Image (tube, rainbow, N blue to C red; front, side, top):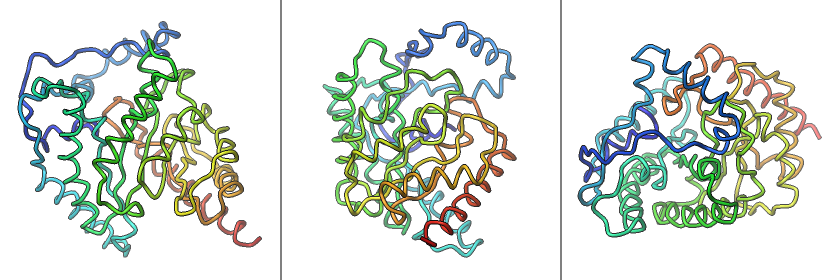
Length: 325
């Protein structure tokens, strides 16, 4: 099941419905590069049916009050991670579990029950709050996955940047409502541009939403910083004041290319961020997940492990140099 639709098995109030939307509307990139996207569509159609099935979306809609019913499933996630971390001798406090933001849940299940979309989002936020709390109370850090925050602009060709900033601002309010009562230092927030291995010239630039993102009640912010479209954006942090109790979690290896980054390049990327926010406030990460059925494009496990090794080797190298100064 996709990380974007796993909530179908954890929320009450959803039922099968013919109202489920079909194909997504074209993105800005799809409109600018129609031949490229048509070729991608043909290649996808030629895949085996079991692979194509990964992209299917549940035909569900909200037909009643949204409730959280995933207690057993989130507990299974917690238990699995605890066992895995015990195997390598890591403490629970060092691990994190991901959970989808309310504003990324709503688009998958049309609202046929609540009077307004705002009421629907608040109901989802209240339900997901239970999952978030369970993760934190288990001793793990909670990572909120919110790709829609950054992708909304590309997927809304009829809107301008200011329109999208209004959407992002409202999304921040919903996320903060869902995080109420959870200590900020137990939360990390992640946004990205999804696994779209395509031209991607219409990604919303970080400078256009960085101030809004920092309004999310989290102790750390994870974002794409390694792929060719965004690597230069480390410089944005030279002009933005990062609160003293926050950390940056920039991607230093990319999920968009199979080429494995050299550890020296990884170290340089880490050192750039350290030069503007301080060495203690940078936690190296990857841009996004390596295996996601949301887009149907997956990095081969061998490549993912090689990139992870490069990340670790580069982080070790950067640490040696940063702490030798």
